[in-house]
Amino acid sequence: MKPSLPMLRAAAFAVATLAAVAASADEAAIRKTLAERLPNMPKIDEVTKTPIPGLYEVRMGTEIVYTDENGHYVVQGALIDTKTRSDLTQARIDKLTAFDFAALPLKDAVLVKQGSGARKLVVFADPNCGYCKRIERDLMALKDVSIYTFLYPILGTDSTAKSKDIWCAKDAGKAWRAWMLDGVTPPKSAAECDVAALDRNLKLGQKHRVTGTPAVVFEDGSRAPGAVPAAQIESRMAAAKKG
Image (cartoon, rainbow, N blue to C red; front, side, top):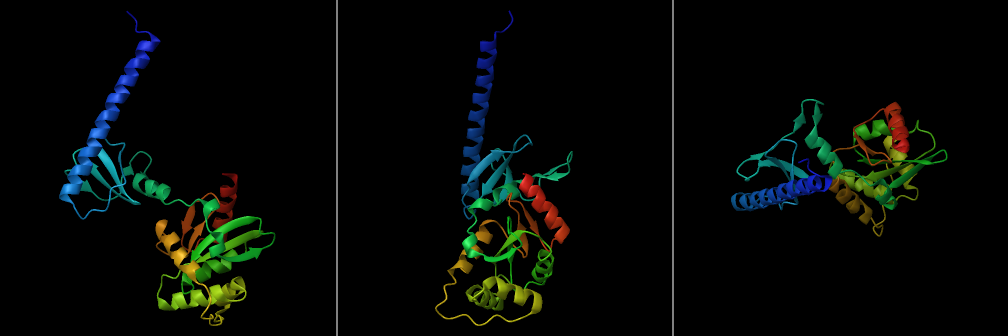
């Protein structure tokens, strides 16, 4: 007797249900074992299967480790797909830390408008970062772009002081460019100047794992670390627009 379509659908549903129940049981076992054996481990946000049978991803915020279905072993490191030679761990982290460009608090950034300013680009930069000064020169070659620089002082107390002075300047964009391109020290900020934006910038960067400067963010939410050449920035901007 040939099985009917409804019978096949019912069988497929039953298999899927059993698999879901098994996965749920594995997740519960993993959470229980790791909580008991590693009490100082950060709170587990998510447990999911990986492409490798019996291996699970354990996500804590944007941190990822791997474990077996019982939580008896924990593996740290990159999961590599040998067929495509792609780093699955990094791809997952990139997805978790991706920027929603439309939701970025651009009011907390220093704006420099070039040409029509129709296109948008975000840069996380420290005023004492040599590579940031290098990329700033390359950014000048871009046409019709609004460059939003989130002051991201991570290189010490002087970086914080300079960021405050630049942010509080009458024309922050002009003060930023003058310092980064010509070494013109920005005027000292007034005591009453509100610099809460700098703290928000640090939290924003930490949330998205911005660990170094410069970090360039494109309109599709992708990013490029380091002093990316102008030609590469231009091509990435064009690709982001098409996407």
